[in-house]
View 1: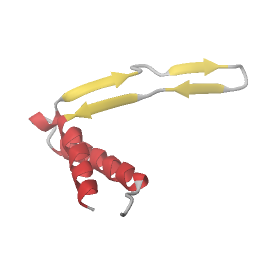
View 2: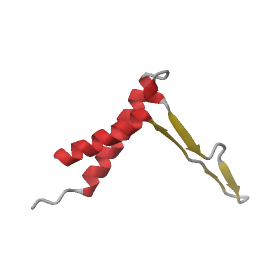
View 3: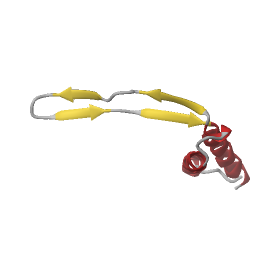
View 4: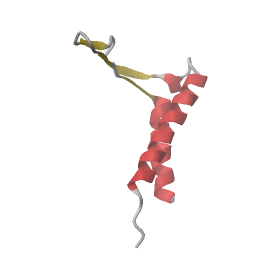
Length: 79
């Protein structure tokens, strides 16, 4: 029995997210770009005097991204 590689699944899902985001950006006014954005709207700044660290994270989930994730999982199942 052949064991599947977890890293291959992760990379295919990541590629699906990237390609889905790219396709969504090609059609900005279509239903593919409909989604939700969440995260830190303004970055969190930690100023320690001699060191300043800025934290920020925003995630945008769109229909095109979800289609890309599903496509990546389907490709993983067939390899």
